[in-house]
Image 1 (spheres, helix red, strand yellow):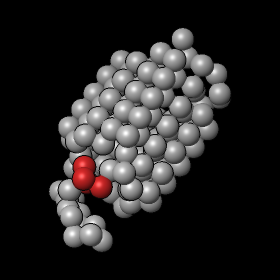
Image 2: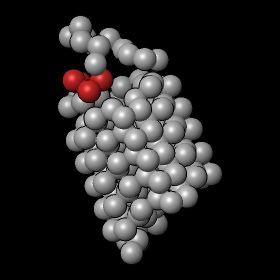
Image 3: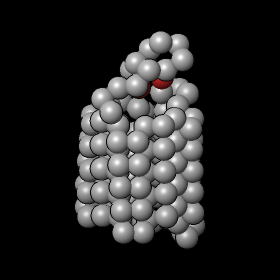
Image 4: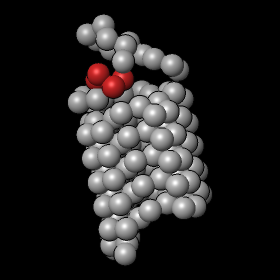
Length: 127
């Protein structure tokens, strides 16, 4: 999916970032997209391509990102509470101060991920 149409007729995901709650963005191509501060609560981002995307301060709580590519993405201060991150590739992503409590990171590739100050799935703070 290179784009999608929203109820107001706009097709740019970046223009809709304030209200993407529950959006179906499966397999979306969002590489280098600016979704900083986006409200993606409960969104379906399975197998989405989000390399080097800016998702800082985004609300991704209860979102499904299973199989997504988030390598090099900026997820600083993002809320990923209760998110499904099964098999996600996050190589080199920045998750400083991110909230990952209750997130499912089964099989996730976290090589080179910066987790300083992040709240981990077990509720502990990563130093």
